[in-house]
Image (cartoon, rainbow, N blue to C red; front, side, top):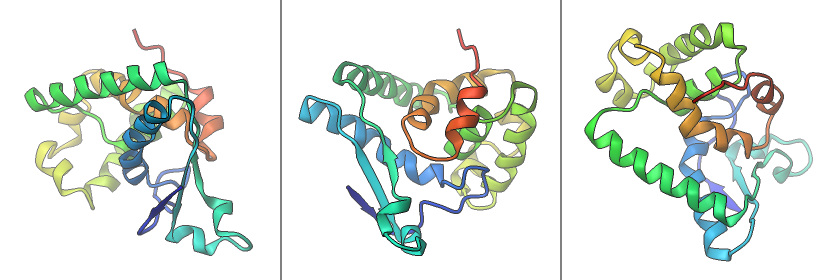
Length: 173
């Protein structure tokens, strides 16, 4: 169980999770799988859980365990992507990416652009790297990076987004 200071619920994205906060715990979750040598479930509890009517853990965000070999492969991929980001900024942001991944294919870009505008209001780093949505959404790389970086995390995270996520699988190749 991880106790997060601040809110993990209440984002402007449709599923109610603050993905930029949840993403911070994903690598720790993957490392826990490797460290313990088996699938481990992580529960994220935050101030937003205090509003739950009966039990604060009722709204805990559950990161489902995954096999050790998958966790190792995910950590290796994330490390390679991190190194790539030092050379060229990656057009991906957790809230924008999950909104796109949970949208029907014909609405992915439009929904992601709306979310991007919302995120720009609080994410100064994103604003410095991608001053305009046109630069971020140039080509289809942004959707491929969303898949590579955030689909696995979103699919292992509990929440209302699960139904939308499964229905909008993007064929990446």
